[in-house]
Image 1 (cartoon, rainbow, N blue to C red):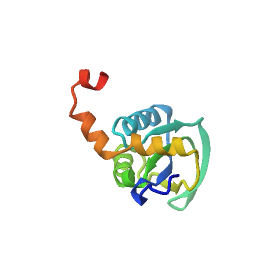
Image 2: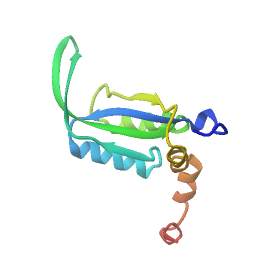
Image 3: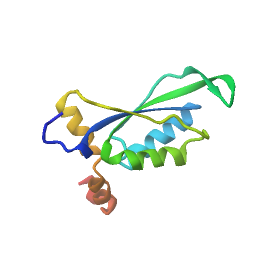
Image 4: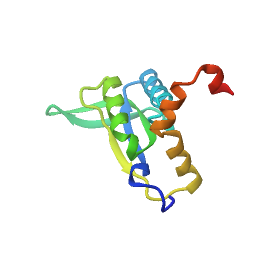
Length: 129
């Protein structure tokens, strides 16, 4: 990560789980489309074991690894909460302290709020140019 990056541009890795592939795909696509995430990895289904309302539960879930920045975190969290089918979704943010500088710069570029606004104002032919 470059020293000139501001705290708002610090990359984050967000973890969440969804109940099925369809909801995982829909959430991933929405987050990238809205530039809240530069990339979302949809992982293979797994089994989660957890305590919920006093009982031990087990469920098949689809994990997502979401790459974003601290600048976009609040909007990303809100978008997950609105679209997530769980009453209490797992949303865990892990700061990225090291990584390939070019990749981390790409995450910052692809999630810039001003980029999202400017491309939304363009016509499809302007975006494709």
